[in-house]
Image (cartoon, rainbow, N blue to C red; front, side, top):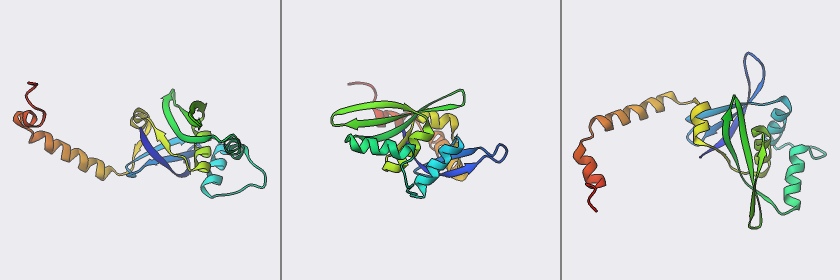
Length: 165
């Protein structure tokens, strides 16, 4: 899994639909997730530390977690099926952990309110992310190609042994 942070909310240039943008720690990969207008407002409210006069839905969820001494351990965006992302809240109360199905937008909105890490399965990042730093990606690929081209079988034997144990 790869830990990602919310980089912000953007609008699709054509459809004007909101997108939450997650980025990895190295800012090399971005994961765009299309969300609804209400979820965009909830995420923006959390990013801007807005405190509504009465609890909104995501604030209510946080209040319930706190009242029942539960902690949101992490959010996991675990799959992508037919252009739909799936997420789970990993909630802990004492020694008991539960996984609760959630839309990624709701999971992100709650995670931001509780300073909880957001994790994305590597296969989801591989399938749906967009490169942010193409130069760094190309440099890394070139370094790997050079490493492979200079690799000799005896180097592998020295490193991993000859199989005799």
